[in-house]
Image 1 (tube, rainbow, N blue to C red):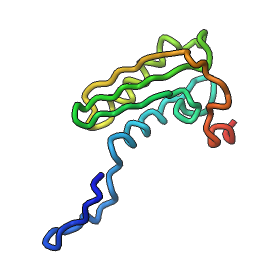
Image 2: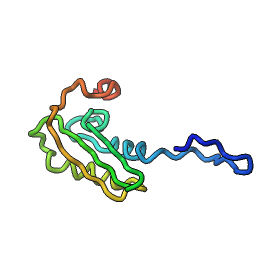
Image 3: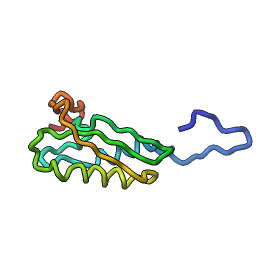
Image 4: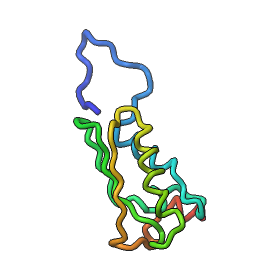
Length: 116
């Protein structure tokens, strides 16, 4: 987003401001839910890193699962990649799974804790 005010001869856009690419990717991540817990993976604290490059139109996601033996371990990275790739302006994405550090309940956002 630009912090530069419009010049006097320019008209200011009156439409609602468009979310940044980072914000759009995070919104896409929030559309993915752990099927065993009624909270999205972002609020659960399963996303450790989300690096978005507007220049290369690429997103790198580092994530974990609630447990290494999670039944969706093979599927979840694909769900995350599909969600991120649905964002206009993203041409490629990579999702890496890690269990270091292992997920803990205190990694959940306050919103997630209240929903549970």
